[in-house]
Length: 414
Image (tube, rainbow, N blue to C red; front, side, top):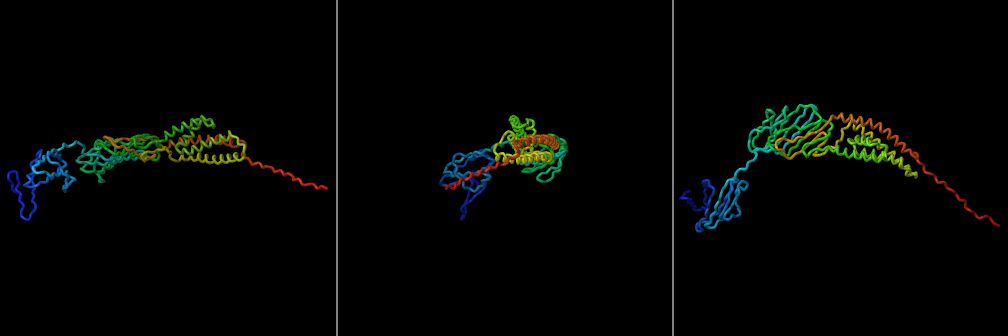
């Protein structure tokens, strides 16, 4: 191409309909384009702006672009100027916004608690725009078992309680398994771990031994709840109300002990026993004159006694051999598998706590309750039998005697 001054001398050879060239401009804050007179030619200006730059246009209105520029990388503008019109393009580069070069999208801290040690596995996903070393701070005096990066074993060891992880640009999954050597006490707490970065979508899990009796939990707001204590409070109020009715010989302490024994077994079975006690109290206070209602009541009380005794007998082996039902619910948790969730953390992971006791404590309490129940049941059965035999055991239907009336026959008359 020949250049004359600030112009390019472009020629179109015979049998050609177009010509073209590429050129570069010196970097400047603005660029001015002027349309030639109508006698020379008509121009169409296509401007593709990189996302790195910001362009402001003035002078010629923009036309909807129909070009084939790569719209995923560039913003495209199209102008159809009239002869002599001028387009001014002011170019600026926006300042970069300060931000983190690494982000933790999800974290899972799984704790397997044993009698003399606890094994924890920390899993988290990292997105990084820059590579480098990143330190994870673990609790003091822990043994690091393994460190994995995208399933590959890393040969790293903690220094002053910190594990340095090599992070390359991109998205990566890490897993750190470590062990705490400590005897299991009444309070079990998830370890204190500092990620060194804000984290999102945090899940804490804790698996307790089968021979532990869970009493309470606390931690992040989304997690397990032990509903037993609220139900126990309601049961205490109901026991007080039942004792105030004075319809049975059971005192408030008797009602309270009966309810506590059934509270970790079945509330339905407790209701059956309560109905049984009140039914025999009603039988001792009520006189049924008719034979049919009396006999039906006797049969119904006998059947109810069998059902109540089955409930009472079932509660004893359930308490001595089974697991207490503490009515644990919330976020897929159970008595021995607890799970919490938190949406964000600034640096340190939230901690969750569970209060437990050895299961033999519960079984010892249930043994004492079974001895009390056996002693109390003797008196309840004695009173029930006395109420059941009031006015007799059974009433046979009275037969109505039929009286024949002689029929008068006409006498023989002369």
